[in-house]
Length: 364
Image 1 (tube, one colour):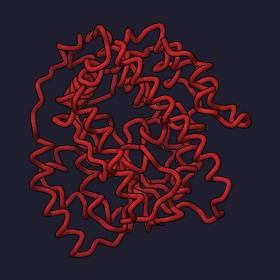
Image 2 (image 1 turned 90 degrees about the vertical axis):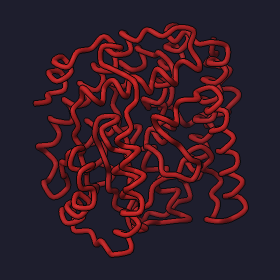
Image 3 (image 1 turned 60 degrees about the vertical axis):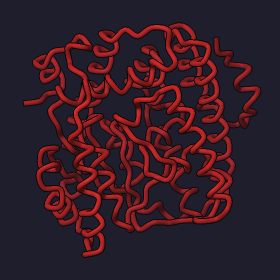
Image 4 (image 1 turned 180 degrees about the vertical axis):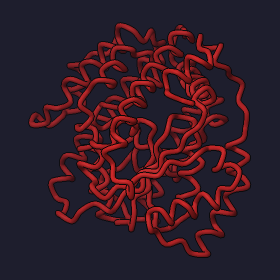
């Protein structure tokens, strides 16, 4: 069992920081009452929460000393999980004008270190240790979603600083917490998101931020409230292919930490969560200026990624030089193979059927 008071006491959170109470309380209760974690899972959950709270406290202190210059323009890839967002995100990351938070930066962000310094190498080494442990307990995870310490990663690892991240549902069966995420005011998570990027800019301010997280779906207005010049690339794929894939990834993670897996319950809750997010997103799109939003398709990405990239850069009036195109072409052969890899999963494994998924996610 996780003890809320002991976790807070050990971390030593600033007493003036009050907005963590609700999400943390709901998360701890959901883990204790619903997750059915193994001893290892309980230790891992407590460790993760403590690390996120420690980083939160450091971010809060560091933000007091940042300048008032606005954050660089974000270019944001959105879409349902497993819809090609990672392939597109990695392709766009080959442009040196696009900077993304790296995995190690989200694990050990502070105090800030400068690029290529000994301190940076030390942080990367420590993050590699985290990934080594992950590989031991979730050995098939990299087959579905490969992570490297020095590679760009999803914003869900930033949202953990606000205790509002689907990361926790991936790790453990926490339906009460997932329900909270579906209905919460997510503005808080984007306040912390903004603080984090603002702090990173002290040592490396980019021309653009390149960001990705499926849970940005349905939060476009919240994002634009913090980043008014943000542009969105929304990639679409048949959700009957994406839903079983995200369920498969979630079940692989949980197997390392849980006593029991209910795959049909996982399928139902996953579908309901993303259907609600998708509905919220559809309601917000009409309010987004046309010049800030572009919808693209997974099949087009696989068939002709360079042409799709040119469309994106043209849409948002971004410069695309020959060096960037060459680096993107170098990535495409490997990246396309990874995107086309077939993993063993089906809707039926999770108690779902194609018609239901299409209906709930408004796919025609």
